[in-house]
Amino acid sequence: MVHALSMNNTVLSSLLKEKLPSLHGRPGMWQATVDSLTLYVITDETHDRMRIMAPVTEAALDNALEQVITLARTTGSSYTSSDLFFGSA
Image (tube, rainbow, N blue to C red; front, top):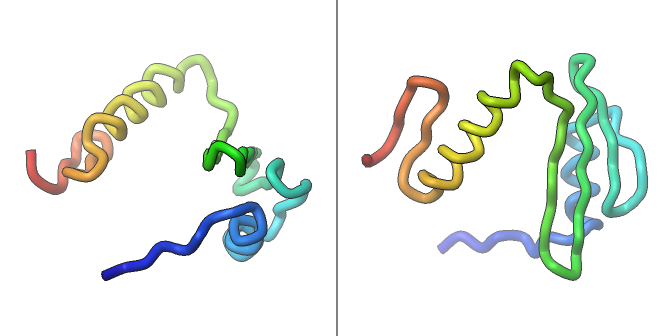
């Protein structure tokens, strides 16, 4: 049996600092830059929510929406990326 870490801003901050050396901000509201792309991480501990956001161009909006729709439809059953498909249909 796998036990997940209890996630909170303290744990998340530690994990983000490992992955994103440019991380700065305060608990629950961080910003980092990766390859000239600005990422924002915002949390709400009370409601157990986390958002990772990055700016997209208008041209990328359709693709981003399709990826989110695919993620929501296939979570727990398969993995898809573009035209590649892994898992059960």
